[in-house]
Image (cartoon, rainbow over all chains, first blue to last red; front, side, top):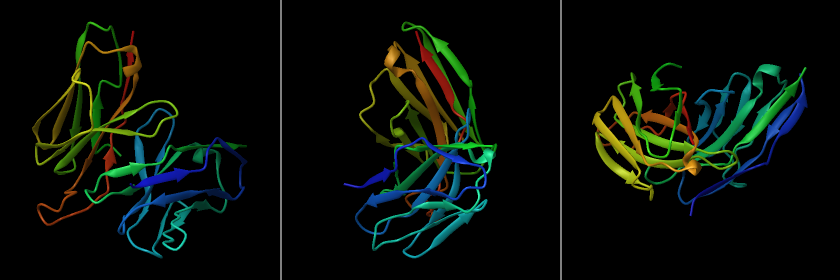
Length: 111
Length: 119
């Protein structure tokens, strides 16, 4: 069946460091891939998405590229800020357009 | 993002109480969802409504009862809950996930959640 695997957190970085949060998936067909972010005390917000192989989603300095050959959708940012501290969720859509979620990765940015 | 609102934001209830969670979306979407988010577990999809019809019920106990009176409102009625039901309950909506109206899109928009504590 479809599944999403994310690196376990928490990930702790200093401000202005480079960020990578790994996400790999197992799926049949060609699912859309998503990164959602959850700030403390809030619901989930769509951060970026990619709908086909080699697409790059980007938003707020974050990027992720849909890699079909490695079944990956790693999230990257060149210089993180304290305000990026949150939980990040990788997800994909199944054939019924339901979201399959990773377990989430907590990111802590220290000043 | 205020497109999806949820009330109340926090709820404490005893195991014998009956309460309801409310979700409202102002995005003109046709599908609405209830999720349960527990600590250190992936989000669990509970119910899906598409054009007011329930299309998914992921083996949720009957003490959770959803209601979707129209495409903008979604309720989750709670009764005789257990302490392990304490969690963040998230509502989401999307435009037309199955492409029924020819506008298929799979992006879901979430509300802020209701933090439920069952004593």
